[in-house]
Image 1 (cartoon, rainbow, N blue to C red):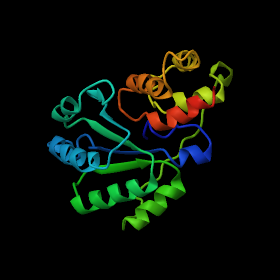
Image 2 (cartoon, helix red, strand yellow):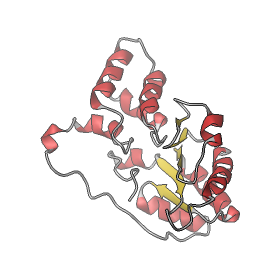
Image 3 (cartoon, rainbow, N blue to C red):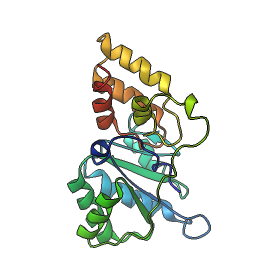
Length: 205
């Protein structure tokens, strides 16, 4: 299962939110996979992602690109975030040609991903779906906040921080972009979508 599955929101927003990432399988093909992940990084970064990162070292809003790249390990999970279908299709085509021999996962709206794979000459190998949220739902933030916080699959973007950023924007102490970047810094893996966050924050104003 992937921590990128649980993004909440309206369909029109989710259709502009894609995570493309790679990882190796422990005890199967992890040994020596760091070099393959660096090649993956080199290929995908050419397509101007809105965020990227490695769970081991952070994302490009809280660390330098070269530090992230140079410290990719066999156990890394390297993520890139995009907002446009056409770019994701081009990324998949490049990765198909490269044939790196490691798993590539694409998160997004399933029917969209299926179509993009077909356009790139690929078939989806596995489909994973979120089972939703269960338990004390009354303890969760309201849905507009969840649409932002669930973009961090490890729960590192807090609901109270989102509220604080909204207040900062309302008081003109931060721009929408600055607030989105501050929230993006908290998501260690780099799967947080700052462009979508700007649109979602705008709805609070």
